[in-house]
Each structure stands twice: as structure tokens, then as C-alpha cells.
Amino acid sequence: MRHAHGFLRWLAAGLLLAWALTLGAQAQGLQPVPALSDRVIDQAGVLGSGRAALVEQLARLERETGAQLVVLTLATTQPEDIAAYAHRVADQWKIGRREIGDGLLIVVAVQDRRMRIEVARTLEGAVPDVVAGRIIRERMAPAFRQGDYAGGISAAVSQIDSLIRGEKLPAPEPDTHGESGSHDTTGAGDEDIPWLLTGAFVVPVVARVLVSLTGRLLGPLLSGGVGVLLGALLGGGAMIPIVALGVLGFGVAVLMAISSAIARVTDTRGGSGWSWSWSDGGSSSSDGSSSSGGGFSSGGGGSFGGGGSSGGW
Image 1: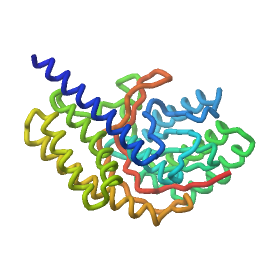
Image 2 (image 1 turned 90 degrees about the horizontal axis):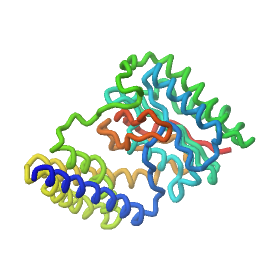
Image 3 (image 1 turned 180 degrees about the vertical axis):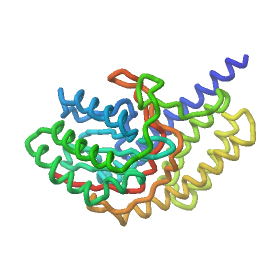
């Protein structure tokens, strides 16, 4: 009976997640954030045979420095500019080690002819905005104009690699899972997993949707109420999930409303301006799978505060 109850809770969490993601995409018309399945996600299909070499280049960087760098190509980020979209992806993926937050994301929007290097706060000293912009102009843009996307990204990664190595980050932990990018970041018992996953994935999406649909005043109240209901459903009536998800729903909705207001007046040209992040280096949003084998996943860290730069070609 206990196993059946646990299965139902898992099923409920999965259905809620699917519903929230679908509703969020429909309500806002935003490009969805893909599942983090590998170090290089080539949705635009422009990397060809060079993709495998890029994956190995990034894996070597992570093995030797601990820093985690992920590449995403896609057709377009519209209706968002690339800075807003890259920040949303980085915020959800939580690239980098959990305790250190040494993540970096490269996004290329082929139809838009725009690219961005999104840098987590820990690496902003190693890869400041002005340097990220220079890498885009001098390494990526010339190669992209020739149609060599894999070569341009590889050249950028090589320069970023040398900058990160000069930062003297904490040494990576020994590989005990056959893949340095695979980490157990939950630290929770089986009974807690459904509502913890709901707090990590569903509540932020629901809060974003409700703020978008009902406004900045009503949205937080409704989000808090939804959080309480989800906590009661998935936490078996325990007070901790009810209070935690209720507070989380309200708080995230408030911060989403603030972030939305700020986003309208900053980074309008896809530049390197400041933007806010509600990420606090919490649990990973990775699905833990890998199209290349090896079980790649996010390290669960990386607080992204808008550092980095955008450019075109």
C-alpha cells in the first residue's frame, strides 16, 4: 500500500510538472527551455561532426578544472532577446558545482544571428563582460560568418578554458560515477522527493504563469495558494511541505514580478547589462540523461546574475 501511495505521489508530481510547463509556454509564448541532456545541445543542427569534439573539449575542461560549460544552439529566442533567454536557461539548468557555482553557458540563435556568453557570478572575475564581448567579436563572429559554428565555439571555449585555469578554482572532486558532471544533489529521502521536485520545477513555472496572467499584485497571492495546495497533496499533510511550497510560491512570484519589470528596461539591445536572478544554487533541473552516454547532469550550482555579453555576426 505504501508503494502504491508513493507511486501516486510521483505520478501527481509528473503530471503537475507537464501541465505547468505546457501552460507556461502557451501563456507567455516563450521559447521552451530544453532538457539539459548533454554538454552540447545542437537544436539548430549546425555543428555537424564537430559536435563530438566540442563535447570532449567541455568534458576535459570540467574534469581538469571543475567548472561546467554548456553550449546550446537553437533557431531563435524570440520573442525574448538572447540575453533574457540565456539568463532563463542558465537559471533553470543551474550549471556549475553546487557549492561553488562555476558555470558558464554559450547560446547561439542561428536565425537571429545572435550569440551570448552567460557567466555565473563565481566566474565573472575570470570572464568579465568586456572579455566575453571580445571573445564573441574575435573568436566566434568571424568563424560564424564563414558558416563554421563548431570552429567558432571551439575557439571561444579554448580561450575561456585558459581564463578559468588562471582563476585557481577549488580542485574537482575525484570521479566516482564514471562522469565528472554527474552528482547526487538531492540529499533527500524518497518521501520528500515529490514535493522537493515540485518546489524546484513546478512552483516557479506556476508562479511565472500566474504573474503573467493575473498581474503583479494578484499573481503572488494565487501562487502562494497553489503552493499550499501542492504541499498538502504531495507532502501527505505534513506542515513543512505545505508551508515551504506556499512561501516559495508567494516569494518566487514576487521576485518574478520584480524581474519582469526590470527586464523591460534593461538589456534591450541584448547587451551585457545587469539582470536579476532568483537562483540560489539550489537543486539541479537536469534530467540526468545523456545523448552521448556517461550520465551527464548539471552540478546544481551556478547563481547567474546577468554577467556576460551578447553579440551578432
